[in-house]
Length: 517
Image 1: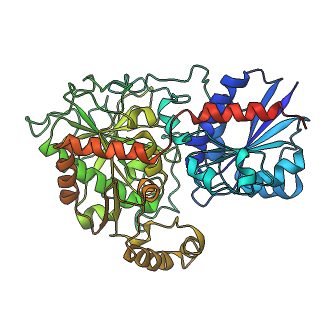
Image 2: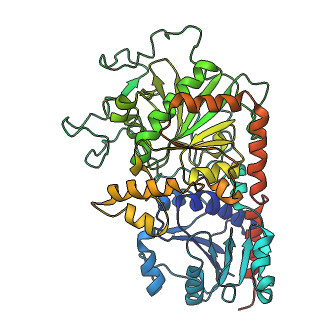
Image 3: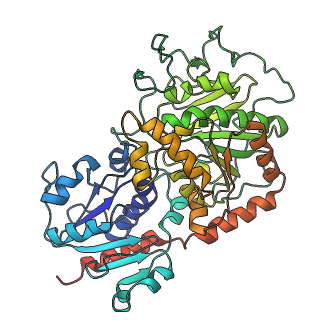
């Protein structure tokens, strides 16, 4: 018997941490014969969306069809997709993000059973057939006559650490161990969301471009490791030249990496990894990149064994990221004296094999592997901005320090509800964002998702006119007291549900497929 599974989802966090493990589990549970089981994904609008969600889902080999969020309401209202998809007689609508009312409407129209994953709340109990919930307290809050529909499956985000990177092709030294977990059935995807870093970069929408200067050549901030030619105006030395401080050589990329099976770095390894997650939007990157680099430099001076990695968001190419570390492009660097760096592509055959090199000789690794869960799991600590990053790190049990610099108050515009709408209004959005952010920051509220889940600050949130040396000192205190990192790691695990949710949710879907109409 042929069946359709329609997955409803929305934002970047849901697509990577919910949809990805579930479609893998569904194929493991139901098989890969597309003639019997077809998996479609339809995305709904999300205020935090990057615009690349559909392309990311298309890279999942388990998925057969994807429709982007721009076509959602036409489907919701009229029941037709942009490409006029056909639908089989039997199927299940699976909710993995958005509004829980959507599967009620769509399931009724298609005549399909409905399964909802409920992380914190379960709604529309009367019209939804089954709920897979994260924790038992969600069942306790449901009306008694509907509790039989709810089953604890655990935490979908706890499964992300065990899912190999889809379509990852990193083979460069230094990450060969970290990135060995590949999807067995992953195949090259020609619609990869990773932008070609050699392509020209549009300049008219960049918040950091000097309008008095010509559009910079996207090749200019790149040093080819094979070439002795460097920009004489650049403060960054030729990577072929001797490193200024002989006591602090650039770490050998062949050096050992912690055991990828453990989220706790190998205590025998002389290397400790710190992840830098500056965000993906220009308003955050303009602060996050140079601030993170400056902090890294202070840490490295005190602990030369420390190495740093930036997981590059799929909406960014390497050249664009590098521009936020270029003092000629980012005025905050000269204004605040934060870190500057130059992009170095080490392998002409693979433009993703790249680093940022600072004037001191410090190397910051760049990885375009997405999602970067395998790499992040090996970090003893991460420095991150607010947003979905905090949820992913929390689900991986990776200790973090959340940075909210207020040097540029319009950096945060992703608030929910009316504040978010006012902050994103054309023309007056910048002024509104500054006012709204100032008011929200005065409330003393929690911003990191693990803290919101726990209703307590289990990971530090550092807010204000941040100074790199002060943040670095906080990081050093944690690195010098690993028991504090372990305590944070334990609390992150405790605030989430159990792993294995994807397989249990797939079992619920299978049960609904066999349910009599």
